[in-house]
Structure formats: structure tokens, C-alpha cells
Amino acid sequence: MEKLNPFINSKSFIYIALFAGCISLMFVGQERQFGIFAWIAPIFLLQFSRRAKALHMLFLFLPMIITGCVTQKTHNLFNEPLLGVINGIIYAIINFTIYFIDRVLHFKNKNFLSTLVFPSVYVVIEALVSSLLGTSGLLAQSQFAFTPFAQLSTITGIYGITFIINWFASITFWISENDFKTIFIKNGLIIFGVFFMIILGYGFTRISIQPEGVKNVKVATISGTFDLHELAKSEKEVLLKISEKPDMKIPSSFFSSDKEIDIQISNTRKAAESGAKIIVWSEAALFLNQNHVNRIIAEVKNISKEFNAYILIAFLEGNCTTALKPINNKSVLIDKEGTLKWEYKKSHPTPAEIPFINTGDAIIPTVDTEYGRLSNVICYDYDFPSMSIQANRKGVDIMLVPAYDWQGFAQMHSKMAQFETLQNGRLLIRANGNGINMITDNHGSVIAERSTFSSNNKVLLSNLPLKTSSTISSKIGNTFVILCIICFSSSIVIRIISEFKKKKAD
Image (cartoon, rainbow, N blue to C red; front, side):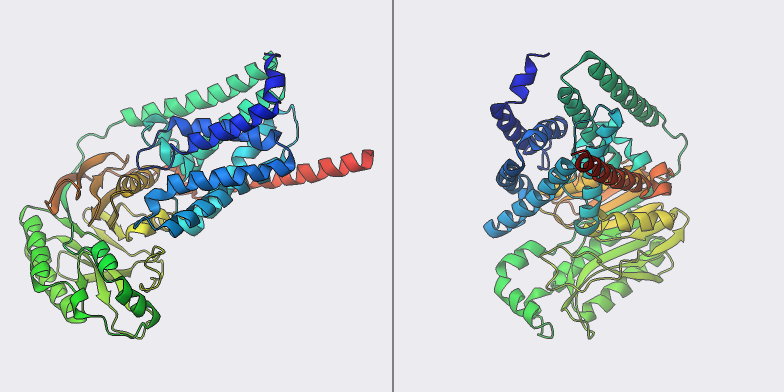
């Protein structure tokens, strides 16, 4: 092992590590992810960030921009070059910040507790970013297919997975920094191995426990006929004018035709006739003026009463109030008695929507039914931890999520929704107008799914087992992140004290 030390400390190894780390990250964050690379990347990047000279840390930035342009391509709906570069720069800033802060706090230490610093920094930065931008792109998202390990999210939330991955990288560096001495290898690997086996043991146990005799309810998703992306491409100039003049009249050609409305109503009735008791439309299933809205609500109320069904309709609505922006992205729940229970506006519009869409109040609605407590958010809303924490506090059993994705992002976004469902023990009905319609149980396992890219069938029917599970994560909220903040803060204090003692000694 001693022969490795000169090589590891050499300039050539440091830049090999940088290259290997960035290449590994290119396999994380894609539509098709390879979870093993999420473990490999931080091992190499930590070797670079902690061993390179201070000024050489800047060499991390450019490769990270390139990596970001590749991995964040899934977020770039229309493949706009400028947006791709912006996404790459944001990605680079986030990752550079993590490794830069860790470098500032790091000093050679034989104490095993020092290995907790890097994963704590990583979690704190990720938690901050996800509170602002949503959870898309988090390192832990790549681990959903590693089912036993993914169960850790039911205790710590998704950030616990991020912590373990980066803790392993930190331990690996700690061993190399202490010259691969047997005692460090033994202690480091035994401690991590025990923790990891406990985590996997918990995961396998949780997977193997299957509920028996669970009551089912038939549910349905209905994909809309409205093509939001086609409108955005074909009417780009008009949309830009509307964004600049919110009071400008929306062209009648934007709104859904009577035929499209009739198809959506017909599909809703078919789902109800097939026995569906909870029916969810996809996001922006139709683009409606106020007369259309009143007509549809009246017709859906009749269907709800006739078939004793809860129906969530979702649509774009030409704004008819004094609001600042011209369009509302809404969902409306009508209960089995034909009563309108809530109107919800999308609370986190995507960057492309911000110029046009009025933002909701970020308060999730709920209603108690014989099937459990229902709630509703729209697409991107479900990516924000604050919305999920709110749902936990309100005791939501079934989350209804109208969504509208695109081909490069659909698979990843559906997995993110599954992960959110797993860690909180809820049921999910996610209707997609341009992506994957999905119904999952409380373990995040798919009960039924259908892609709009491979099927023209607008209606997905399934029996949903009414089994929820109150997870530790759903009860303790951000407790794990707070613990990481405490560890992060403590490392700052320790670093300051260490520097003070060093100057005093000099």
C-alpha cells in the first residue's frame, strides 16, 4: 500500500481523478441512470478537490459545466443551446460550491468523525438547492433501482441516501490520507460495513413485509388531448407578446375545440362507467375560456353524481380576473355528490411557465373520503420538499398529481414521484398528458403505468390497494437535514479554532 502514496499525491493522479469523477457524473442525472457511478464520482472528485493546489480548484469548474450540459439536457425541453449552457453553469456552481466548502473545512485528521464533514456539506447544499429549485438532479435519485438501499428514505428522507454515498467517498479519502495503514482500513470499512448492512437489512425486511387482505379501489388517469408543447412552438411570438401584455386577449385559436372537450368528457365517462371511483386528468388536459370551464364543471358534476366518483379535472384557463398574468394552471376536484371541493392553482410554475402562469398560494387542499384523505398538487409542485412536508402534516393518504412532461424527462420525473411516494408511505395517482401515467402503492411500486409515447389509449384503469404506511421520514420531516446542518456548523467552529491555535503557536 505504501507504494500507492507517491502516485496518489502526484499531479498526474490528481487530474486523472478529476477526469474520472466528471466522466462518472455524466452517467448520473440522465434519463437512463447507472446508480453505481453516483458512488464512484465523489471518490475521485474528493481526491482532486482536497489534494489539488488552492488555485487549481478552479480547474474543477469547466469540466463541471460540460458535465452539467450533458446531464441536464433532460431538463431542456426545446434543446435551446443558451438554456443548455445556463443549466450547465448552474450545475457547475452547485457542485463547485460543495467541493470548495469541503476543501476549506478539511484538514488532515486521524479522527474517524472527520469523515462526516463532507457528506454533511453535500446534504446541506442539496437541501438548500432543492428547496429553491426542486429535487430534480439530486444524487440520491440514481439509487431508486437499488430497492433495499432506497428504503433508507423512509427513515431519513432522500438526503440520507445522499449522505451514505458521500460518506463512503469520505471514508475512502480518509483511508488514503492516512497512508492506507491497516488500522485505518480496518476501522473505516468495518464501521461503514456495519451501517450499510443494517440499512440493507432494514430494506430487505421492509420489502418482504406485504399487507394481506387490503381493500382496493378502482382508479383512473386520463391523458388530455391538448398539446401544450406544440402550442409553445407554433405560437412562440404570440406567447411572448402575451407575456409582455397580460391584459392582451388570448387568441381563440389557443383554446381547445368543442371536439377536444367532448373527447375528454367522453373518456371521463368511460372511466366512470368502468367502475373508477377516483379519476384524475393530466395537467393542462384542455385550454379553456371561462364559458368552457363552466360547461365542463357542470358535465363532470353530473358524471360524479351518477357514478359516485371523485373526479379531479386539470386545465389551463384564460385568466378572467385582475391577476397579473394571463393564464391559470388549475385543478378542480368534484366529489361523488357533485360538489366542487377545491380549486387549486399550480404553485411552482416551471421557468418556461413563469411569464404566463399565475402562481398559486402553495397550500395543498385536502378532503376526507371513504378511500382516505385525498390531496392534489400539479406536476413540478411535487418536486418541492415543502409541499411533501405539508402533505405529511395534513395526513394525506392519496396524492393526485396531474402532470405534463416530455420524452427526455418523463422516465426520470416519474421515478422522482415514486421516490417521493416511497419515503412518505402515500399512494400516488399521476396522470400525464405527455409522459408516463402511473399509479403506485405506498412502497412506490408501480401498480399500473402507460406511456403516452407508446400508446394512444388516453385512459389507464387500475385497482389501487388502499394501504398507506406512516414512515419515520414523514413524521420527523427535516430532522436529518438539521442534524447535517449541526455537523456542518460544528466543523466550521472546529476549523476556526484549529486555525486560531495554529496562528497562536506560530
